[in-house]
Length: 148
Image (cartoon, rainbow, N blue to C red; front, side, top):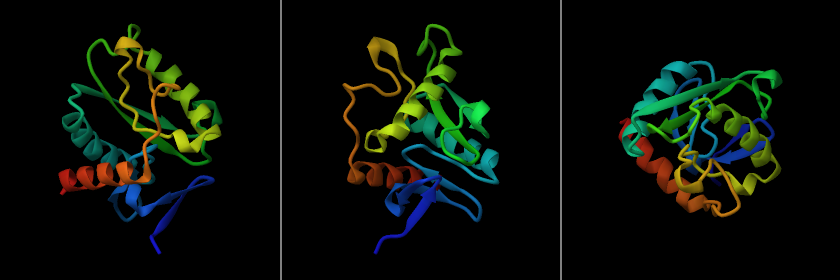
């Protein structure tokens, strides 16, 4: 039987994990990080920037409902960014909040957040097909090898 992890009310399979430290997990779907989260977020961010051709990152920490938290624990979103990916740079925060709430209603639609809205593509929308467990496991394996 495969190892499973709890992410708030959700269960995450080991195949979605690309970083495991004593206190943290990096996941390919919602990418939460726990106590040593900023060290892990910076480490993960360097790999995410390179892997997805980004020039910057948005690292958003959500701790509590007023911060937009939709799962009941502190976590961060590590989002690759490119110049011009949003007309108003701060629109990313509205997208994070709106899509986090929507994703919890449809966990099968959780996809990698690439934060590229050029050409009408957003963080999540009906045209984007949800990824399979196999696709997420392949991405986690690739990212894990880049962290080595």
